[in-house]
Image (cartoon, rainbow, N blue to C red; front, side, top):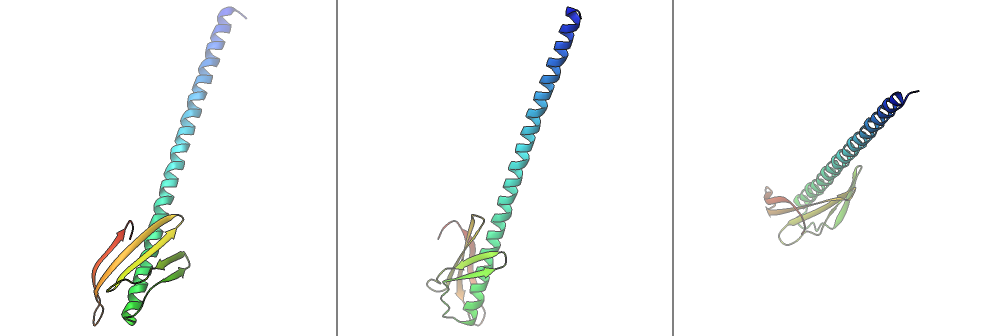
Length: 130
């Protein structure tokens, strides 16, 4: 084997190793990006479920308040996909609910102006804290 063939072989081997290293780095980067996208999507799904649970509790509390004007809240509602809390009803019918689904917490506050003969809701909002 001549020196020239040896140098050509070494250059080819070096090129192949560099291309393989770059391919591995690209593959690892793409897989990390994919994993991060999946985590973000799961967080969004869990956040949506927490919101729906908090809304379910708010609607449940409003139905109970419509049936009994003296309903005080302060209970946990358990459904197949999780649970939410109806906090104690405050003042003239301020309903607060809280749901935690996979560490995603959502809180809803509903202020009711009138219950009978028809319920009038002054505001319904998701809040960061009560």
